[in-house]
Structure formats: structure tokens, C-alpha cells
Image (tube, rainbow, N blue to C red; front, side, top):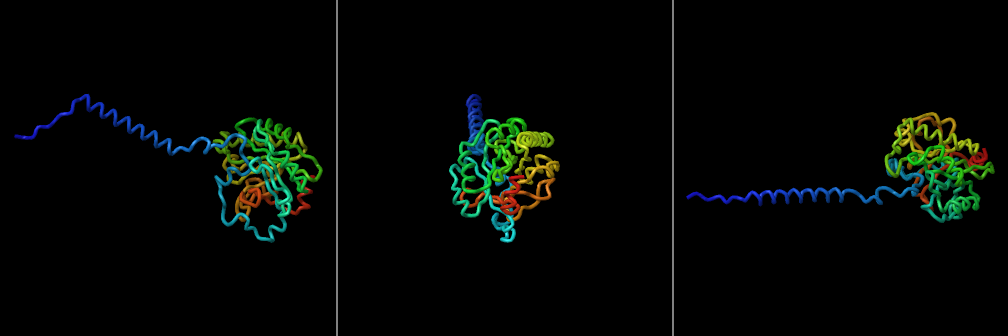
Length: 283
């Protein structure tokens, strides 16, 4: 006799298929969750951004060591730093002793954030003899350029011609909170920047410094050239040379060359002597 084949009841077969499908779906969901970082890890809290926050993430360290600038080049440049609430209480006397002669402090971000350590940092740099300035971290997705310039000037970003106060700086760079270009088209971004710069100059009489990286400027403004003759450039590039500048500028005023310098991390160089720096502040 041939072997008899045992059949599986239809109801049991369908239940088994449903269980298999459910387990497969659960595993897929768990796989996605495990591959997705927590929101607190991937997106920082609004207000916590600082100058260069996206430069390391997008551009990294280029070429040799960031501080490997030949001594002859350093001799005609003046060391500076930039700080935010991240550094809290800064050892200004230590920085002064190491040769730092100027500093920028984050004052504001968007139209609602002010650095709670701003006064101590801003006045602390001044108290040690440094030339000091304030910067605004731009978030074009949270308010107009005009509104953000007003907020900046009203909360620490004003300028005076005392020879010790640098013009305010607009920090416009990779968005740490979302879309790299803040969900603006290139023409919209250029218009936003223009509105900020025009308002700042109308309020203070000085042209604001533009802090940016060449890669961001190319990506988010399309290599716009219109600000190169009116606004000083502060270029961000962690390398042994400043590299290609953003479109429109033939020279730079300041260069953020490392995020891992002594005492505070971010170190910069003014493209000129200490006397030239004071002249720039007073102009």
C-alpha cells in the first residue's frame, strides 16, 4: 500500500500564515526603529547651535592638521576665538596669555533665543584687552532676515566705533535642525541674506560680516557673487590652508581654521596684524 498523506485543516493553515505575516511585520518595524537614532541624538534643540556646527559634519577636516599653518603666514595674522553658551565661563586670561587678541560671542539665534552667557563672555573678552564682537546664528526657516537682524541688534549685536567692538557677524551655514538650506530655494536664500544685511547696516551703520563655508554657499546660494564687495568674509575651513573662497570674494577677513583649538575649541585668524584688526573694528 502507498503512504497516506495527512492533510492540514484549512483553518489551521490560514492561522499559521497570519502568524507568520504578523511576525515578519513586527521584525521589520523593530529593524527600522533600531536603525533610526532617537530624535534627541539626531536633531539638536533649537537655540543650541554654534558657529561651525555643520562644518565638521559636512566638510570635516581637509588635508593636513588644521593648525599646520607655516609660521611666516601666522606672523601676519592675528589669533581669535568664537564662543557660545557651550563654553559657559571662558578662561579669557588663559586665552590672552596664549596670544588670542579677539573674540566673537554668540548673542542670538532666530527671533527667540539669547545666549544666557553672552554678557559674561562678551564683557570678559573686553576686560582682558581683546577686541570683541557678537554673532547671530541664522535660521531662515523661523523668521525673516529683517526680523532676525532687528532681534540681533536689540540683544547684543549692536556696533560702536570705539576701536574695540567688531561689526556683527551673520553665521549662515548648514542647518543643524533639518534641511541643509532651510527649505529655501537659492534665490529665496539670497533674498533672505540681503534683507538681514540691509537691516543690520540700516540699524548700525556697519556692514555685517558673513560667516559661511564655501560648500554651503555654493549649495544654498548657487554661488551668488553679490555680497563680495560689500560685506567682509569669515570663511570656515578646517585645514592647513583657507582653500577656495565662496563666490564673490577675492580675499577673506577672518578664517575659522579649527574646532579643536586650545581652551575653547573654535579658533580663528584675522587676516592681518593686531593694529589692522583694531582699524577694522573702528572703521
